[in-house]
Length: 499
Ligand code: HEM
Ligand code: HEM
Ligand SMILES: [Fe+2]
Image 1: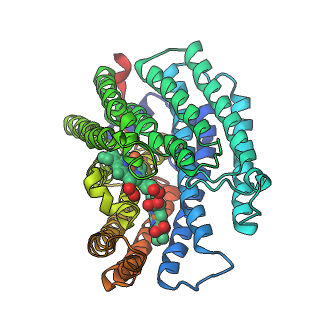
Image 2: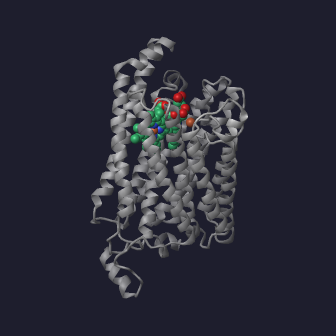
Image 3: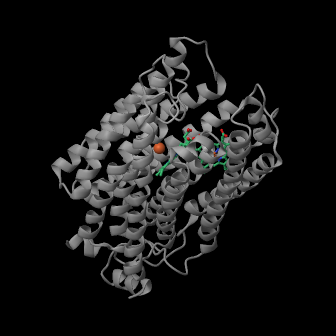
């Protein structure tokens, strides 16, 4: 049955349906309204991430650009902090979005959740303003509390750290109390356990130590165990729910996959942490442990690709949200390539000896964060927009489909282009600075001044502009897609609801 037939059927049944579907908040539950706030800030921070990335990339080519006004270290910090925060906003929003549906009841303590959103957003704004306007402080405790903690990716000052922990506790309360009042499911159980781990790990990044080896030792607990364990499980949960809604996959199927993926992910990702302990002054046994377990980490990512492709192949005919589905597929492949393949390339200590801390890491970092986490968030934005506009048809033959198609193409080509440019630079650094020149100081400069490195930096900027164009188009599309659509989506999810 096609969308038009369903529309007629819906009208026949006397359902309310406005032909000029704007964004209508009546279509949303209270949790979904809060989710929309989170998504809005996420998109704004995504734009900020890209703008500051462009500034940092320009400084690689013109080192005097904005010198003493917005130095490279500041732009880089805002670039990657904005990334971490927008992705977390996206995840929190996605969970508020699905919470009522999954638990079959209203959110418990929602006013507190709403307050937490505003507190968090105010804190993020202040932190960014301090990063930009104050930038650095004296080397004493007050700088740590008020300006920044100096820990890459989680630079937020201590006062904000404490605020973030409180906001997370409120979020956790919303989730657990709602499931407890309504219905627990396998998805709910995995989500709850994962949130405990995710929030708990953040605490490891809040302890400052004067011994740098110890400091790095704990810092990696947040950085590695977030992205290679708890965030992966979180996207597993979001994917499971999304596949049910998007394709009508049965709950037993997604849940079984989820359990397998979670077991594999924790099985390899926890000790895989050792791949960051090779050269920071930790005992030698980490070379073996880290090398072995992190080499297993791509396995769950293969499972996720198989899962997505299997479900999509079986159910694609029922899909009525092509942009969301396309981004889900981009997620499965991006996660596998960026984290799995690009991670695996430099995870054995014998190789990492040469590649450590070169642009190789940046190449992997870009493809992994984009492929694994930007994609799934964008998929969810499309899912949310569809519902917000009154569950309209977003399958084939929608108006202005070129926009979402070009957005996904430009974003993926842009990030892939940057990834390849950085890989070439990293290869050249490993070869010249490390292998030929034995990691000497002079070797470092030979590596930096080589044309292969310098050209790569230009290519990175050019592909960065392509990425930015893709993002511009994406935002435009998210704001306008389905505005004039009058057909209703097919009823998806009946199958999963039954089971
Ligand atoms: C989505 C998951 C992942 C994300 C987002 C991610 C992201 C990153 C980032 C941003 C860095 C650079 C950290 C820094 O600033 O020093 C990094 C380093 C690294 N990643 Fe991943 N990663 C992921 C998964 C993996 C996997 C599965 C592997 C192995 C199979 C891996 C292997 C490594 C290694 C060995 C390094 C250290 C590079 C060096 O020595 O400089 N990563 N990762
Ligand atoms: C316009 C597009 C972008 C440009 C021009 C850009 C540029 C940069 C630059 C110059 C750095 C500093 C690298 C260094 O210290 O050597 C950086 C770091 C980083 N960027 Fe981007 N970026 C862009 C988009 C993205 C996207 C879309 C993501 C992920 C979703 C991302 C994730 C990261 C990460 C994780 C790092 C830290 C890498 C590491 O520590 O190894 N960037 N970026
Ligand atoms: Fe790692």
